[in-house]
Structure formats: C-alpha cells, structure tokens
Image (cartoon, rainbow, N blue to C red):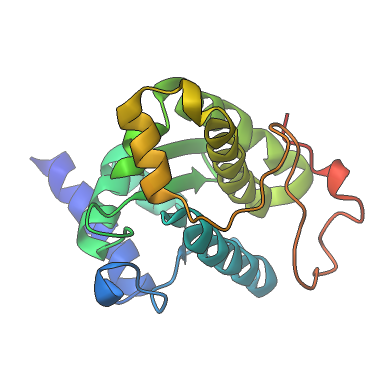
Length: 219
C-alpha cells in the first residue's frame, strides 16, 4: 500500500508540475499539451523544444502520440523504479493519445539510474511487437554517451518511425488485422526511408545537431 501511494505521489508530481491535463482536440490530438516532461531540467531549452517539434511531426505523420519523460532520481525512488506503472499513470491521467483508441508511445529515461522504459498504447501496442520494444529499450540508452539525455529520447522516436516505415513497406505480408491498423494509423502522405537508415533532420538545425546525420546512426 505504501509503495502504491508513493507511486501515485510521484506520478502526480510529474503531471501537476509539468502540464495541464490534456483534452483531445476534435477527438484526435491536443497540440497544446507538452510532449516533454522534465521536472529536473536535464534538457536545455533547445533540446526540449526539438523533442516537442519532433513529437508533433511524428504524430501528424503516423497519427500516434509520442511523449518523452525524463525521470528524476527522487521520482524514480518514489515509484520504486516501476517506470511502466508511471507510464500508465501519465498516459491515463494526462489524457495522451491520438484518435478514439488514444494511440501513443511513451519513452521514460532516468539519467541518474540509467533506467529506460518504452511503452505503446492503442493501435501502436498492436503493431509494435515485443521484439521491437525490447530492441528499442536496449539500443536507445546507448546514445546517451555521445548525445546526452536528448539522444536517448530522440533515438526512441527514430527507432519507432523506422520500424513503422519498415512495416508499411512489407504491409502485403502482414496479418490482415495488423495491416489494417497500420493503414488506419498512418497518414497517406509519408516519406518512406530505407529501413535502418536514419531519417533526415528537418528544419533549422541547432548547433548541437551532428553536422553529418550519418554520425547519428541507428542500426
């Protein structure tokens, strides 16, 4: 009971201090709600804004929400390291998700404990299989050494987009129910990439972006 109470307190801290409760706009997506929750200030303003922009672009392309959470040491201890439960609470109480089934992915990273968690919801949980979730969970933290906390979170989104693009290229070979989910959750206007290649960085690039995108390799 005490652990459960501590978990709820920690989750409430993240929700209440970082964002107002999201309300889906026209049943799709609330652009006003932050997609970056970082109570400890691990990310500078430029990196946090970049992740916000990347999340919005991702959601518009794939009709799937993407939320980044940097968990502080105190929050990690308060929830007993149960980042999966923390993700569920943020998803439920924050009103995140796209569409009627509230499709979303949440990537949580605790720098102090080097703990990472990735969770999918809605149609995304049907399309992104356990093997891919394990792959994302194993590989994303590896980008912290060179790119810092931003790199871990950014890699989470890029691995997801590359996987979805890969699935769409092979959509004729997928079970009908999975193919239907992908077709329903993906925008018709997409820019396919070669599976495994890093997607090009778009827009104006802050000075901390790699000069050559190949320096941020994903596979």
